Length: 178
Image (cartoon, rainbow, N blue to C red; front, side, top):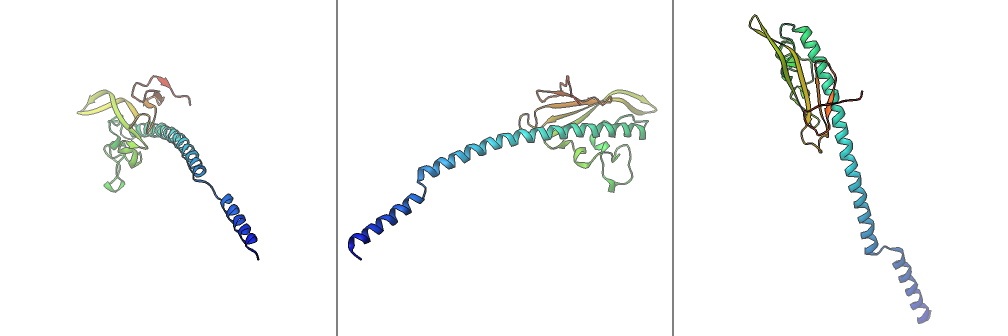
């Protein structure tokens, strides 16, 4: 084999190997595009998480309303419960009682569930035979961090109608379309 043919083969091998790879600039562009697409996906995931938390809050309010109805039927002298932990309770602590009714799940009885904070405020108190009876209540569920864990605040009362505050607070004026 002569020298010219050998150099020619080497040049062809170099050209074919070099043209099959990517340049650093091409790899950086591809990585930048992937990063942009990932950021767009994270934004939509955050939005879906807030919506899911909001749906969970509405569902939790419905459970609390049902538990309040059952509580008032089971303990008519007390009326409605004024604390979430009264509606909850530990089954190992003994049979249900007005302070341990065991009507809602333990996670909801703590007042914190899926990015929302729940609370009950009792209204219309009547005292009879040294026992306070509450004939009304308001339940609120607000995001722990508005815009991050949820967007709306939700409220309901003994009527069971759920309303919401688009600002994430407790000034619930808009009816929830159900």
